[in-house]
Image (cartoon, rainbow, N blue to C red):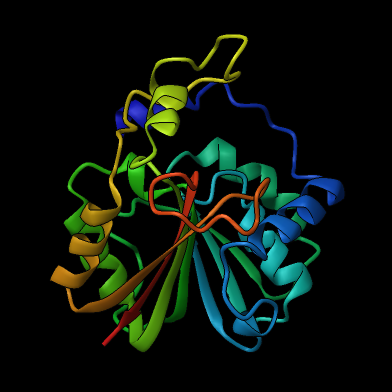
Length: 219
């Protein structure tokens, strides 16, 4: 946890813009099934929320019963206060995914964007996700496809260069598709993985695609 807090300590305080939310909506159409209907009148947890982009978009656009964004780093999440104050069905919670501060069976859907590969001890987190989901509820997530060697190279060796801008947290690791499946199946989910690449929308290959849509239902 301390590693993530230190890494994001210098993150900006700028709230998510309308334009960014519109781009996120188009992006989520690639990895969230049955969009927009999937969120309608549901109780949603956006975990590892960062600046609350996913939770804000769901509350603003998809008519949930309630959307909650949970993030470990308080000052990152505080940038979403401006949206929380505008939206009646949106809440912000500072907390840790290894011990979610919610009662059993609280949510219809847990959603996360590029979250699981920050979490050594993945089965502890999938167990917590299972605890707070209602029976039949879903985890929906997007992860990098680290079975693609170019994705591994880009994230862990070329970030901060002319080829791959940005950086990565020291807490990130190359989580493989088979490890995601195993972690959800172990704690009582039926998990399916769908491979995609936003630039080549017809490419659904388990090696050549750059991203994975994770869809796990609590049995």
